[in-house]
Image (spheres, rainbow, N blue to C red):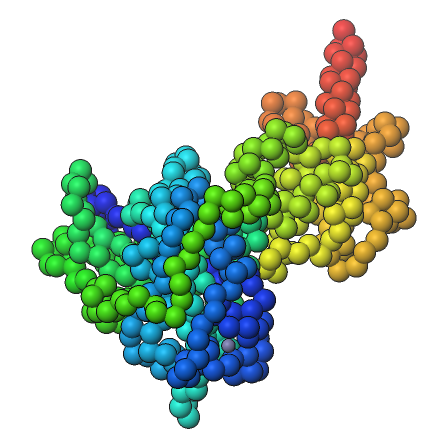
Length: 484
Ligand SMILES: [Zn+2]
């Protein structure tokens, strides 16, 4: 059921793992997939007497994220202890930034079917990750490899209104963080996770309703789905005159809905305390200069450039630039191809089906794709053959031109051969020819279909149609002459 009288107010808190080789407060490695508890030390295990030391490169990456999201970088920011008890948190507090975060007041542009919107970024702060609980039938084990890995938390203002917008925001954010080298943002490895804050209010009202927080959503599709079903759940409660409880929920992938976890904590529950073992983090304007200078071209700039340089559609450019490796691949391929528009259509429409890896990696080299699309653009092979050859290129590398020639896949474009085939088709299909004369357009399609069948799918469809029409009208003329 839909309740159009309510409007959803959504804010996202995104955790992204910083792409550093070592952890944020010690020199343990951050490699993903190592054997449990092989990448930890007294500092990240929280043993008494150990002292944290801030990873300089982690700060640089966090600043890069801030600059890429047009934030103000605080000249002075501070670390705090966020205190709570949970077995994955060995110190019983997490080092985070509470009142004085590193970055504030940024923004991010999102694009949906409804157009372009600016979403405000309230803050970005640095913190450490917790360990990982591994549940099995014989008990729960803890892996501290992730404990102390550097994170940034990017908090948006409650500016999002739908699951579609939230998903667009996450995609845009991921594109920026990956491009700026801040994070890998591999959602399936947990290096990007998102908490969703969601409340409803009557349209036209300013005050926010009671909100729920959906924790640890780890895919764009789940975020969109979780938001859709949470909007539905809350609107049905409100429509029945019931209250929405302020609580923490999680998205159950199997059930496809959100389920209650616990009553929502407030900031007071965390008893924040200044971290005494880390000094105030001071960033001067001079510190920012080299970081600013080394910033790469970001997705929005690149999108505009791709549209301008290659003449491709904006929607295509948005998809290409959402993934730097994909945009790189497109540009590498476009160097060898004269029709970049057709190339981008073919890449996004056909090749992407074969690319399931994250980050993007193509099973076909950029050069081969360009060669294949060039054959199609020059009308030497038709679209069907191009798709068939692509499916084979995914399996093995070969020259599309050589194979198309060897296997007789090139389009038949010489007039004489086409005329001969069409003459045979017309002689074989008197019924269709007659139907066409009576004005049935479907009969023309049937004749074209016959021509494709006779030519083994290789007849140039445009030229074939032209000759077909010519011959049909010639026959008409002859008949008329015979009658005179
Ligand atoms: Zn350590």
